[in-house]
Image (cartoon, rainbow, N blue to C red):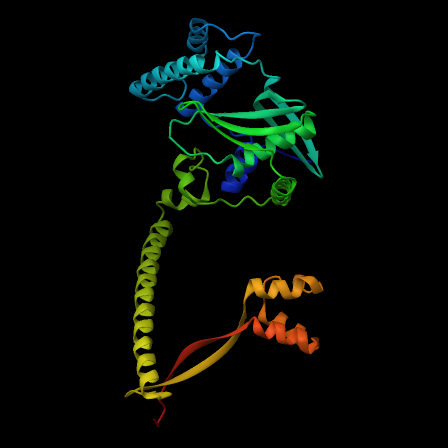
Amino acid sequence: MITLSFTSATTYEICPLRYKFIYIDGLREKPTHYTTFGDVLHKCMLFFYSGTNPPTLEDLIKYYDDMWSDEGYDDERIKEYYYETGKKILTKYHEVHSKNYVKPLAMEKDFCVEYYDVKIVGRIDRISPLGKDVVEIVDYKTSMTKLEYNPNYSEQLILYQVGAEEGLGYRVGRLTIYHLPTLKAYSTGRVGDDIVNKYLRKLLSISHSIRMEEFRPSYGNHCKYCQFTDLCPMFSHMRDESEQGLTIRKIVDEVGELSKRKREIEERIRSLKAKIEEYAKSSGAERFYGEKYIMIREVVKRAEYDHEALMKILKPLGLWERVLRVDPKLVDEILVNADSALRDSIMKARKVKEVVKYVPREIKGEK
């Protein structure tokens, strides 16, 4: 059984090979200053809500000092900035939330849910009472970047809802992303079952790919922050100083230059064909002559259908699934056996699109 958390599933989505390095090969990443900072603030939230009453500000800051870690800070100025910022965040948080303090039902609560052949695990930052038989799920974010979070599309909160309800027996009434640096809460109601099931199916798909050992690397902006580039085939050639490796560098540059010229040539061809088409429409000519080539104008007609109109016609008849992608060929198959009323309705949704093609051909002895 494949075990997936939000973090591991997201890691696989971004780069399957990085997932393999971490979750299968067991390679560890060095802590960064922002992960260390986030870990410290999460511990402080756990301390803040550990008692029947909130701690004093002095006790909260002392705990912060005790939990502080220098791991991941390569620059003394950055470390000092984060340290002071952390104290300001906690001071403000204490000021706001100690007034109407409510002890949570749980903090840093682990869950485990089995969904077909996937074991879904996670840890919820905070579970608070919201009303009769319902709870609020709170996930703390500590990024110093000012982001606008949309809880309606948070797969992490969807997963936490599943964990809280299926794994811990709660009924979720509200889902909240709480951004600690700005003390701003982004909340939404319970996510609908259709959205939940869609995400669970996505996890099934990811688990299937893992089981099939599909671990190709994925190149993107995330590579700038990856700690495994020395093991990644996306970067192996960059380190190859052999004769063959150096030859490939030249070949890559040549292919790039040729591709650039190809795009320029294709753009020039489109521009020239547009001028011929303009002349064709004004003169009525269908065949065009040069000194070496003849250009023949061919018009290919293709049927297209209005998506919404066709759905309204076919769905009540149980035929919509057969043409879900609105493939004109599949629609034409329905037309063959359709009665006159159905045929007329479909034909009203039908449009004919003309695609103009120009076929260059070398002259061989005649024009």
